[in-house]
Length: 163
Image 1 (cartoon, rainbow, N blue to C red):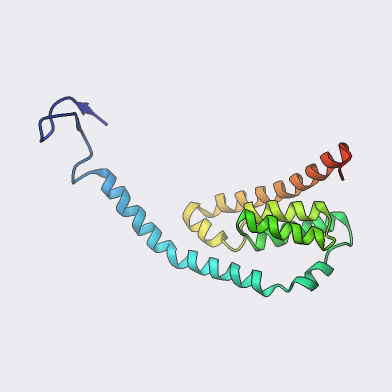
Image 2 (cartoon, rainbow, N blue to C red):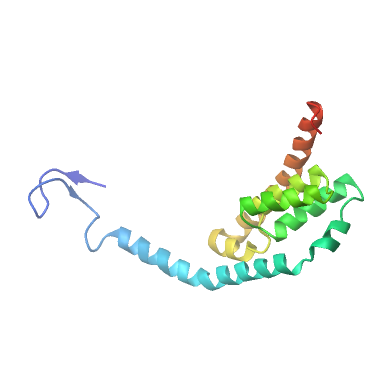
């Protein structure tokens, strides 16, 4: 951006190159609007699909899937969190209900972290916007991180005697 003093149309203040009608900013804005318009049907579809998945899963049988082994529970929790991505506050509420239902802290921690960071249902929209390779790598890294964070959370609580 080039700034030259006292050359604008009104005779006061600097003239900023690139801010006029033929500005590259307007072209970038137009391209952004077009890209958003192309992605909108996919975004709406993924939001509807994730809402249907969350509503479709019955709560009582899901609780029966947990409790066999700590590591299997962590994988199940991270998997459920990955599929049913949602708002962090909703994840914390769900985690509290699962803890009250007898699910282990490691599984609930994995579910909540994956709930917020991994988005399997939103993967097509993310791949369209950011590229398939990036979206897959980000989701796999976040899935592994959810498991690691769950393990580290429980290990640190056990270390200090709170779990």
